[in-house]
Length: 564
View 1 (tube, rainbow, N blue to C red):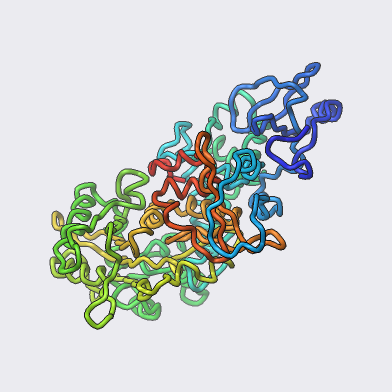
View 2 (cartoon, rainbow, N blue to C red):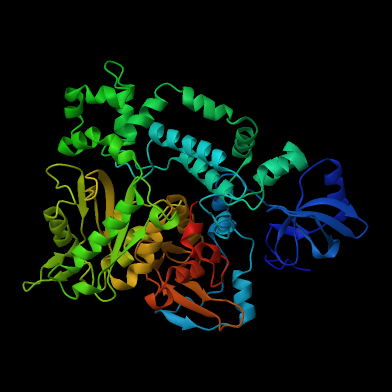
């Protein structure tokens, strides 16, 4: 008999040997089994020809016939364990012959399509099936806060991976804590209740079975739940300079690397914002100019949450201003909240806005064939109104893309898409939407707030801009990792084939539709060929592609479930 979700040749599962399983139970060894529907369980007991099983995701025990179970022999939930496993990076899928030379629509029998997508879920896939509400129903706020603190300490001590130009490397420790926080946020069971009813040992087993959460971090999670802290948390807080680095790195325009250099200076260390303010000589050496000086002066104001009235006023003012410009179809521009304003339902210490148009790009060509950028004209108007502080006074970072008018758009097939690492990292270097990061003065109170404005590069790229700029960073990373598992690259503008991982094949097949009752659809792509936009006209459609044409990731369609 075959496992319903895995090839008979796979080493992940084997027919359940009742005598061997009974021996493992006597020796208190963990045995994980898979039922006919593909769900994973702990094997708890064997009675005659039936097995008592407990769901890995939590829930009541249930009884299954031994003949309907397979033993999972290669399960590994340790950090990046599944991502490193070649069974994951070389996903087996139905492919056309190597001679295919163009994008083609392929209709496959439902049985063949089911075989292509019905497999042991990867860690990223399991995470994306969850929901991440702002407030967990299981009372994990204190635990999430502690894990976020650990992540922040790692970032300030070792650098913010790929966000700091000075440190282009993956901060694996920070990544572990970010993932652990997401795991806790997405749990469908209560850690406290499990500790009370099952004890520490079995609760530890359940946590270890969660994706991306190995034994070390699972133990830290339990320690925090039981005592309010863990050894690593306390040690990090006591670490020489760590709190000081965290404080200094919170200043806008001061990177974690620069903050670390200030604190670690053996001859003349700076250990607080107050000390840096009192040392204009050291401030001048940092090279931040008026931007850093202003950010330091108004630091406390910029750390305060943006009031709802101000956030709404920012949205309305930006939309009103862009529609008042002398540009083609100005009345068609639309402003919307992204970032925390969309996932939480309210702004944090900044406001993220996305501008888009159903017909127009982020720039248009003048009479001489030169691009005119909407963001430039908009900022001129907002500065004239006194809402945005100019670059001569404060932090004012603007980025525009000049080549979106080329056909085809070169950034849709950039070579870096094929060279993405297995960690799924990304930064703004490959985001070609026009954008502005700066300081806003409230018309109501004159207080200063941070504002980010993104102008969607092209109308058909809007779903990707919405998805990426809504976030969160950890969730985006998991979605990109999932795309990599499928031989794809998920960017800020498109889904693009990275190149076949199957020897002898030059194409990648993308399952677009596999829902019950619908005609199965697969699209064949050449290396660095974008998936046609007709298949990804919404965030939901993008999530469906990542779920191999299914609605497995349907929870994430609602933005308030994306607080990973």
